[in-house]
Every structure is written in C-alpha cells, then in structure tokens.
Image (tube, rainbow, N blue to C red; front, side, top):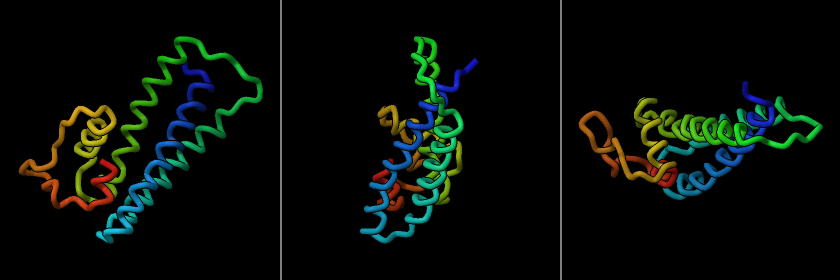
Length: 135
C-alpha cells in the first residue's frame, strides 16, 4: 500500500516539473510560433495536479520515510513526470500521446532516442522552438 507521504512527495515533484515548463514559455514568446498555449495548459495542468496531491496527502505529523517508500517515490515520480512531460507535445497537436510519452521519457532519461523525423511524425525542424526547448 502506498503511504500518503509518498503521494505528497510526488506532488512536490510535479509542482517543480510544472514550474520548469515556464522556461519554455520564454522561448515560445520570443519566437511567437504558436506553442504558447499548449505549454501554458501543460504548466497549469501539471502544477494543479501536483498541488492537489500535495494538499490532499499532507499530514501534520511527520513520519520518516522507509526504504520501500523511497522506491515508491522514485517509481511513481518517474512515471508521473513522463506522463506530464508529454503534455506539451500532445496539447500542441505535434504528436499523438504515445509518441509524446516516448519523446518525454527519452528527454527525462537523456537516452537521445527520438521518434521525430519518422514518416508519421514531424521533422525536428518543424517543431516550434518552445517545444524544442522543452524537449
């Protein structure tokens, strides 16, 4: 069973991830290529979901986290960060969600793998600069 402290910590991770999307907003504003709204929607969705987890699972009494809790935080953190990191690509309409998830996980893990440039996806040169910065 997942303890409330684990979901509270994952909420903090999602809030930080959401605010990190704000750097892409700067590039989007600078180049004006129409990717501002998808990035803003992604930021708001991620921060509000993280805030919800943070507030719902907040406890007044502090409990030490166990090793098992640490494994749960890492597992849920990676999965939730990939799920929410895919939103800017998906909301922009550049990629379907499966490809957006792959691109987001690739970016988070720094593997360098990409689906961009395939026959069914956009070329990397066609992606707006705000999304490229997020990538």
